[in-house]
Amino acid sequence: MSTQSLTLDKHQPGTPPGDMAIWLFIYAELLAFGVFFLSYAFARAHNVELFNESQQHLNRESGAINTVVLITSSYFVVRAVAAIREGLSRQCAHWLSAAIGLGGVFLVIKLFEFHAKFSAGISLSTNTFYMFYLSLTIFHFMHVILGMVILAAVMLKARRGGYTAEHHTGVETGASYWHMVDLLWIILFPLVYVIR
Amino acid sequence: MNNIENQRSRFIRPCTRVWIALLVLTGITYGIGRMELGGAQIVMLVLVITFIKGEMVAGFFMGLRKTSLLWRAIMASWLVIVGGGIAIAYLVGLK
Image 1 (cartoon, chains in turn orange, yellow):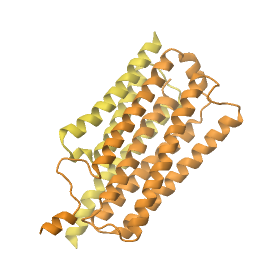
Image 2: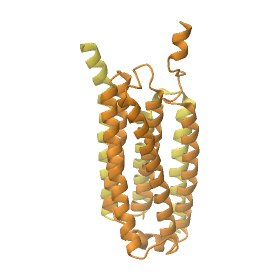
Image 3: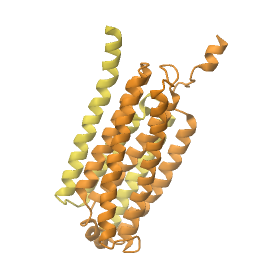
Image 4: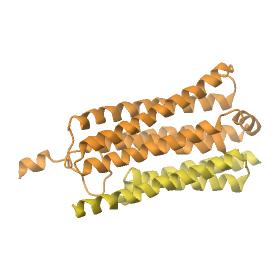
């Protein structure tokens, strides 16, 4: 009895799924991005014309497609968690692979966008708008890469049968981080690409 | 077997509905951007849509809707502060 309680993943009722450490990390990340978002918004308030004019040159379609891509990858991760809760580790690995694949699609689309801007001679020092646009999106880009690395590690373990219906905190932890990456983009897209 | 299938459908159906709703709301936001609509009312609409999307991801995808009030309040507060701050900054920019 005591051995079983030691080996089962402990989840306190009322707490979020996954390891508690990831939630401290998530809230710290949200705080950092929140400051970044508000800095952008108030910088825009003092340079409305510049921001509106510069925003015209962004590829809004790429931003919208990437929103759909990240939301869908988040949905796949939800399905992966649902699968492992039923003890279906192979299905869990498949859903995670699909989510990682969509993460790759996001990166490729973003790289095309960055390439277009850098080819046009745009850099961090072009103007205040592009300083925010590039630093915000590159910062988020790096979080997508980290999220994909985490999901890949979880996926490989799931493929080896390393998680069960009772022991899957790792899947929930990776999932929580990936949803945060999605959540950040859900705010970044309207803020940078739409609001004018 | 039926019990397992019922459990599965109970879990999948809400998250699939949320996913579709998120896509629809993204489509509305994109449409507003494509038409290059601006102004305080439009921006408030965009921010309300963004808040709803954020709450959906936090509640249904991250699983916060089944957690205690404190966890949900932290996330909701973050969304309100960021969204509200963006709204205030937008209104400042109109002056």
